[in-house]
Amino acid sequence: MKKFLSYLMVVVMLIMFVEDATAQRKKRRKSRDREEAKEEITKPFSENMVYEIGFGNPSFLGGGGSSQFNIALKPAVGYKFHNRVAGGAFVKWDYLFANINGQEFNLHDLGAGIFGRLKIVDAIYFRAEYAWQSYSYDRISGVQTRANFLEPLIGAGYRSGYGKWVFGGEIMFHLNKNVRDYSQQVIEFWLKLDYNF
Image 1 (cartoon, rainbow, N blue to C red):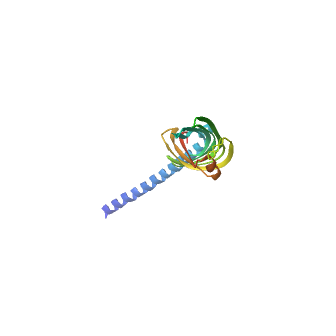
Image 2: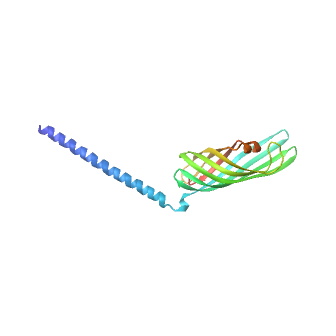
Image 3: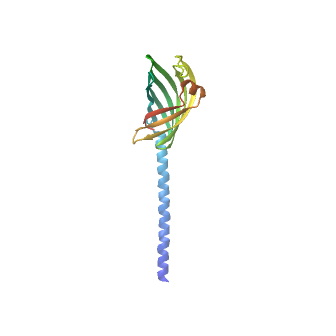
């Protein structure tokens, strides 16, 4: 009987110790979560700034007496509202050089807009944009006339790297059918450098 009571006493003491240790761990975890939340709120404005540089729509085409070179640039600046959510503004410049039957064209498309990003996991994010686009010529008729559009775009991106600077790619889909018809472009491809997102 004495042996049984001593074992019972050891088991009871272990259970009490485990409960006490668990309670202390929960208290530390809650205080750590509160500290991290305070740090997130009290970060200086500049530490939540997000910067991007996009290089897009690279193409080299040729054949049949014509050739074409295309490249685009899209710098952006934004603010990180949460670890996974950011929004901001961008400008866009698209350069197209075309040589068609000996006649050369240097065309510049311009744009500006706002964006929002939602990070799903560290490597994958969704992006939405609302942009003003100014195209320099009608891709269907080939007539050099400037046309302006307001359009929404949606897409997704992949990013890789460690630290503040990361690189990746992004695909954006033109939701406005008039833009898709005028520009003869359904999607945009972007190679990206991101800072602090």
